[in-house]
Amino acid sequence: MRNIIYLLTIILLISLISGCAASDAEQIEDETGLQVVTTIFPLSDIIKQLGGDLVNVHYILPAGASPHTYEPTVEQARLVNDADLFVYVGAGLDNWAVGLAETAGHELLLLDLSEKVPLLESTSYNLDEEEWNHLDEHEIEDNHNHEHGPVDPHIWLDPLLVRDLLSPSISAALIALAPEEEINFKQNLVIFQSKLSDLHHGIEHSLSALPDNKFISFHSAWRYFAARYNLQEIAVIARSPGQEPSAGWLAELVELIKAENVSAIFAEPQFSTNLADRIAEESGIEVLLLDPIGSEDISGKDSYITLMLYNLDTLIQGLTD
Image (cartoon, rainbow, N blue to C red; front, side, top):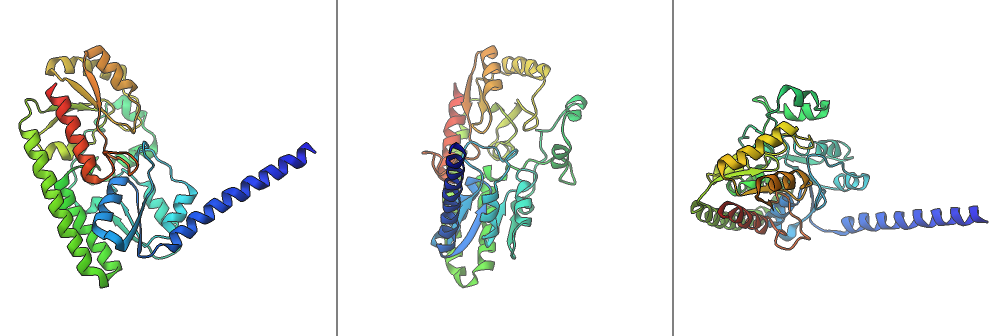
C-alpha cells in the first residue's frame, strides 16, 4: 500500500511540473511581436526601451547570480529555442549563451555585443604563476578569448558605450527582423539615447566634484565606468571570478587600503561578501555594494538607468566618507 501511495505521489508531481512547463511555453507562444532573449537584466531593459511594445524580452540570469559562473536550465534552453533574437555580452562573460544558441532548432539571429565595442584589457586576471596553475581549462580559455590578451566584458556599465554602440547595434538587429517597424525602432532609439545622454551628464557632474577618485572593488567590473568618469580602480579583491585570492594578496590589500586612505570596499550582491568584510574589518573601513546586474524585481535597480543611478549614489557614499 505504501508503495502504491508513493508511486501515485510521484505521478502527481510529474503531472504538476509538466503542466507548469506547458503553461510557460504557451504563454511565450501567445505573445505577439518579436521574441528576444538575452542573458542579463540590464540588456533586457535596454532592449525593452528600444523595442517598446513590438518586442517581448526575457532574460536568463536570475537575481543574485553571477554571469561568470551561471549554468542555464533546460527550460531556459527551450526559451532560446523559441526566440527570434538572442543578445549576449560575449568576451567571456556569458559564453554559456553560445551553447544555448547552438541548441536552437531554427534560424536564430545572434548578437554578440562585445564585437561592437573596443574592449579594454582586463586587470582581473593579473595572476601570478601559482594562481594561474589553479585555474581550470575552461577559465583559462575564457581569459584568452581576445587577440590582445584577457579583456573586460562589462561593457554595459559605460552609459556612452550603451548610447553610441550597443543600442544602435540592438536597434539594427530589431530592424533586420521587422523592417516594417523601422520608423518605430529608430524613434525609440533616439528617445533612449537622449535619456542616456542625461544619465551620462548627471554621473559626470556628480563624480567630478568628489574629493577622491581611488577605489577597490570585489572584481574588476568597473573599468569602463572608471575610464569614462576619471576614477581609479587601484585593486580588486578577486583577480579571477570564482578564484579564491591568496592570503598574501589579502594582506597586501590591507596595507594598500591604509597607504591610500581608501574609505570603502565595493563588493557585489552576486558574490559572497565574506572576503570584503574580513578586509574591511582589518582595515577599519566599510563595505558597500555596487551592483552591475540588478533585477526587474528589485526596487531602485529595476531599469538600466535606475541601476546606474543606484551605483552612482553608492560610489559617492564610498568616496566621500
